[in-house]
Length: 315
Image (cartoon, helix red, strand yellow):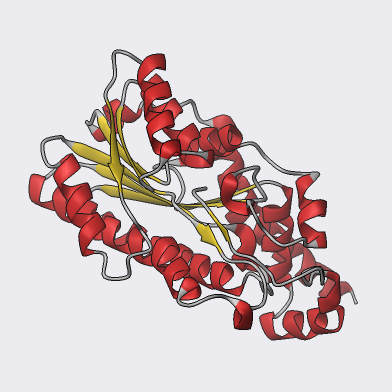
């Protein structure tokens, strides 16, 4: 018993040192970043920047003296956001690129983004756009599930290659930030595509953080807890969403922490849900956790009032 207690204490101490301490230092001890100076740039690209976390990131970047290119769906929200930001920050430049990140081929949106940033010294890329199909996978319409993977994972992959190549060829530093999600720490029934695609994003980011060091590009994966954004607009009625709403963060909270963590850690968890589920995933085997959840699946299943719709939107 004494040996077991000592072993648990050692594991707890190792977890504190390798997980909690770096996050605490990055978020609460180190001073605020000067992104312009660190990355020698005045330009950032933000996908999904017409609302939610993306819009909050754009505002904070502009306030820091960095011009922003917003790539998002070509709709009224994009036009309104650009107009509002341009009015609020008249000394900075805000460009809009209307794109469809659900295009699995990717050629059209990457061509448009490359053209919109060809004449600037692009040093910061925020792969933030997200699409959350909720409900039973069998009930999703057409290629919606595959398109969600395109938005959540493939678009970030293509943007990463674009920035890494530019920084390598132009011999200058940069930063690449993925808005992932704490949703993938545990099984994500009724949001399976989202959880799986975000798991891929986080793994990609951890690998690129090592590759990026070769060319001076910092890489960060951000794992927010539930955040009040359009991502959940039109979502089916899920009991778990009502619970998470009580602890929800604002987009600006997430944006502030994201910019604080860039270049300091390769991944950052934000919010109570993220902290707790990360710890649970480290303490309990994944297969055992899945088997534990199965008998209680009805607690998080969509309400039976009709076919589960799709929720889509920028983060």
